[in-house]
Image 1 (cartoon, rainbow, N blue to C red):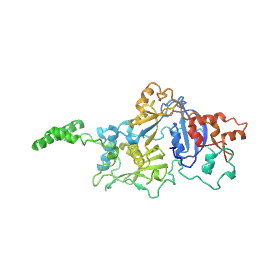
Image 2 (image 1 turned 60 degrees about the vertical axis):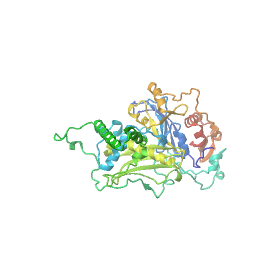
Image 3 (image 1 turned 45 degrees about the vertical axis):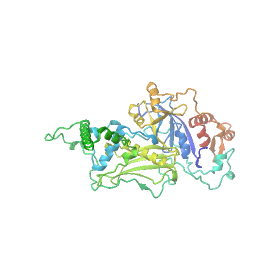
Image 4 (image 1 turned 120 degrees about the vertical axis):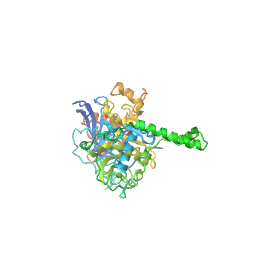
Length: 475
């Protein structure tokens, strides 16, 4: 069965090659290369296809790194939310937040927060590329009938249009704001059960307030030793109870271990708080999902009625795409970047219950050549997009190639080719002089035009599926 497409449409203005700008990772002055385009309108289905070819957006600007030229290649990464396997570090973050909400405890396990959790978000647009120039056009209100979009064969005259016809369906508001068509008025909050009375202790103590060890108290012992002693005490107690019942310890141990299933992501996030917790954290999001439409949303986090973090998310036909996350650095001790990413994974799993195809969580770009940016690979199972065939490759198979070369064709099948690599230029829809025409007609109207190479470049970058679906603006 063919994939159902929404009836809205996309209008793009290709801005070409953005060469030799400063890299934010290796600090090369002129080593970063990319291509860009302005999205005056963006249908969610078209954007899904674009990010599956290595594009990302920042507001209305869409950009695609020139992978074989840029100094630090940026590989699109996604995680299968339905099969997420939590790491030890991710579990620690969830437990740390739970302890803080329950008791106001701000001390991380081990006494130190890992460097890559302190101030770096595991998602979003750290890879932002500044546009070469801003568009001077505003085509967001252009109104064309769905029939004209689908059946454009020549010039689209006024009689061929439906008067005052705006496109129905879901359109991604590419400015990063919440889509009013997708936002339910009855928005709800995911609220922890009880709010504490004391809202004063919201931030970690100043380093100047931390006192040294108390000489009157016994020295601290390692947590590993304490856990071992507790385990031995429990085994001794169970051995004594089993002996009194005439049972063997082996039978009791077998019965206990049969129910020892790993805790899921939801188990950690929904672990009950005490009756009077020290803090209340609310991940606020609109009370709607795929059943109410797709689009851009703000995922807000409220701590004791104080906004401490906001995640910008795109809800698309097959994924939740994390666009950006910003948070109050006062609460960096909670590792909000990692915590928000796990919350967004949980949201993806929740949405999949009503939209089976929506199972992926897109985390932006993975930069293997920058050691500090490899942490996105800790979300498992993850996949990287091959920059030549646009096939998803398990990260475990991709990273050995990237250890040898910063740029690599990740697909091991040497015979594989870009399925949408060949584009029929004559099928590209052009918005020209307020008319919707096909590229063949556009060339007839512009016999002296010299932009064919630019249109070919655009088509090769977006691929046949997108090139034949979207509308390209030509001034």
